[in-house]
Length: 165
Length: 350
Image (cartoon, rainbow over all chains, first blue to last red; front, side):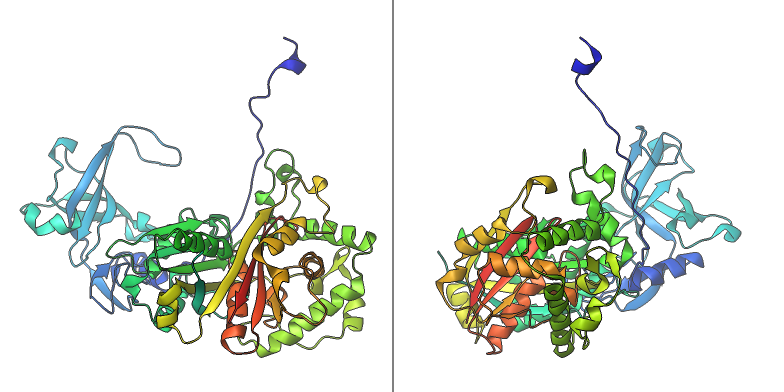
């Protein structure tokens, strides 16, 4: 087959779009908190549930989350998975363990990496604590938390966290 | 067919840049407002449908996050169109016609200020042969204006008069963004932005959101003193290829208007989604609107153009005119795609 009869199987048409993103009132409060090493949750005006990070609304009540509360950087593993598959734009060495962590005082789980123990030991109900980057490196980024690691507290019974699982 | 009515409408003030609030924070007050105004308890609204674009938000799945503003607990029946909210209304209307639900919440939002809107809109063109050339939205609209001028469909003076009238009418719309008294003669002395378009022929960049509740039959009658009935609604699409279209005319609008029943009665007002001045003139002709029809009393998209929300806003503004007693029968129109590629026409009656 001559070249002109070859099917065209691929073309590349680069796209470049720039945005100036503004995160909104609630997300900005969260990011300013994290810059100072604090995890701020937003409490629903109607039901009192605490979301972290809050986008400004309680997704159950559609009410504002006006009050901000500083939460602990300790929490409980709600669920987890060990990732052994590479993905683009993810700058973490394989394999790694990612987990949904319910911070103390929050009503919604928060995503973090688990390190500091063999993956076989990670379990639902395990207590963990945030490990922060050195303070000099803190930015307006959730990346200020390097990972979570187990602390020595006793596991939380599943009954106590099943609402969040 | 079931009788379906707009029973509540609200929108945010349109602004050049919404610096403080995110989409959820913009939507929450107006969704709360329409639900309260509708008289239908929140838990009884059968369906929720939104219109927006991740390309405008600069964020993937931005529409999923927006559901936080609705209160999706217990879980709700929900859908989204990556289009103007007018098409979300169409989906909700179909859902009601199918008898699945009796009422629906429709909303839309666009923070156009976050990206380079004219360039972002290039990405809705054919990705193989057109988008790589980089035609921005203003340049494409200019091609259309040139086509209409050369065909003798309208003049630059006509375009300036549309712009002046729109911005004057916007003076009485507190939610409009660009309002003022302008003399068409003076406007015509300003330089071209992208020939033959001058700055006044182009829409402002706007951040805004809109929300609406619609309901059928007795649900509407019982909840609302002045339901605004959707007597007809239809939408039609033209080809992607600008070169294959007669840009000086809008056959898709004409057909949608015919199917929606525009000509079956006297039209008091029309809210036409014409982001560029010449597009109003093309739409007016396609819909066969007489000179005595009051066009865009809200100021239209030349006064506020939140991308993905400005079309739903036309239907909302027209419904307000009827609910407020200023009109008995109105035509509302929404557009999508470059140069009026896709058009939705809706006939509303008190």
